[in-house]
Amino acid sequence: MRIFGKDGACAAIFLDFDSSTGGVDWVEADVKALQTWLYSCGARWIEDYSPNGGRHVYVPLERRVSFSEARDFVEALGTRYRSLDKTPHQNLNHGCMRVPGSPHKRGGHQELAMSLNMAYDVLRRPNSPAVWATLNAELASEIAAARAMRLEQSFTPSTADAPKAPHLTGRMSRAMQQLAVTGLYDANRYGTDSEARQAVIVGAAAAGLELTDVERRMLQGVWPGLASFYARYSSRDRMQALRRDWAEAVSYLHKNQGSKSGKNNARISPTSQPSTQGQGLKENSVVTDPDAEHRFIRTWRNALRLKEPRYQDSRNGLARRMILRALGEAAHMTASRFVEFGVRSVAVATGLDHTTVAGHLRALRSEKDPLVTLVEQGRGTKGDLYMLTIPEDVKPAAEDLSWRKGKIHALRPVFRELGLPAAFVYEALEHSPEPLRTVDLIQAAGVSRTALREALEILAAWNLIARDKGRAWSIVATTSLKDLAERFGVLEAVAVQLQKYKDDRTVWKEWLSKRAHSVAELLSPTDDYPWHTYEGPPDEVTLSHLAFNQAA
Picture 1 (cartoon, rainbow, N blue to C red):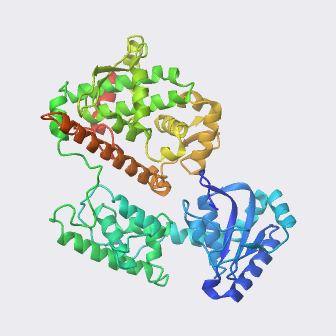
Picture 2 (cartoon, helix red, strand yellow; picture 1 turned 120 degrees about the vertical axis):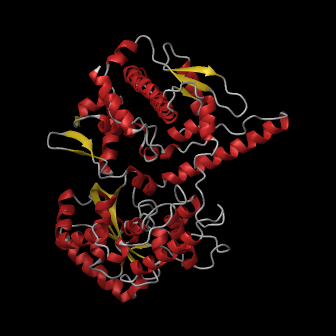
Picture 3 (cartoon, rainbow, N blue to C red; picture 1 turned 180 degrees about the horizontal axis):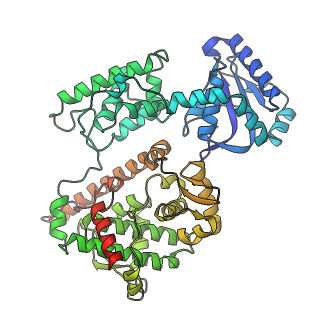
């Protein structure tokens, strides 16, 4: 049974006492000491036992608690009880527990150590927030120590002065990310755990990560698979072993920096920008003044803001709003109002299926006073050519309206997990110059009251937004969207989608080659654009012309 839900919170604390650490007697002593402490704090619990002598203690909670809060609590308890296994609460995606009645891998089942009626009563009347606060107050010093160890650890000079690796790839390969998360590898490729972990370290170094980035991912449970490879060392020697592996990886990369792609463990990212892109853009560019185009695109974004109420009444409307943002982002990429990105590229940018994108694009261009116009139908490997259009009915207002500060984003990877309403709420707060109240967010984000409430709960649970004393919401700038996406495993889903579309394009290319004497372009020049690496138009262009527009 998984401990954490999709909201990143849990409804109970799962405490796993492992007999393999200190034996059955040690487990019995730890469990009795824990139960005495829980009783003194007024807490209620459920207990079961394993055929191998292990024990599970469950502490149900009336109010769900966040992943970080539960992890801090269990790690603090781990300093008191030697046989307590902390790892189930240290992994958001894979943390799970064998509950009463479940078959055990060594035979037999998990059995309750109390009557079924008593266990049911505990679940029916879980521990109140006051009891949870008491438990945390009793563990305050241990929790502070656990947080300091994980988040505020002072690294030794050898870490701070760790050698830098040559930046060879845009990101870690999909295989290396899977290996770092799961710890599972092909025995035909890597003979030992040491070889597998060294491959991960080489991949991380080649992708531009630093040693502190790898340490943080291990300590915070983002890469539990890599951390498991260092379990053979004592706790005080693990980081030193990691530093030795890092030094070897950097040395290897420097020696093989000139090697051809494919001979290194760290491969070139499959989402890297194709070499034909620059040439393709020159051939297909319609307008030659990028500054003028960026000004037009920002005015088009004003028109989008004015026209968005037409899309706020349905789920299809939310998808079409995101597709329009993706087209706006694509226009900024190419510095042109003309967009020739294929539906598969737009699908990657929006998290939708390419067939769904095609249907929404047909609906958008068929609207009265559309925001996009189909200029040319796609042929061969070329996608449809669209032009961003400012409808005449809102053109004067769009031109008079001040440009919105900040960059336009399609669906950033983390919101594939958190949902479209959360993406629009986060965007509204991100672009607002001041915190917004809930009632103001309904109009600013363009979502229903119910969707807004759910989105606020999800964003707040992941510390992406916070509410001040005036009951207004604002962005928590210290929480990284990229780190959360990595924690959710969303980047893996993006990689799967990219690989699928790459295979589709290969099949289509083969089909075309059999039915034509020649194909001018085997791939659309922008079809493989790495959306997740795009950062928007240059800031100097954005800021200078924003000032120009306001002055005018």
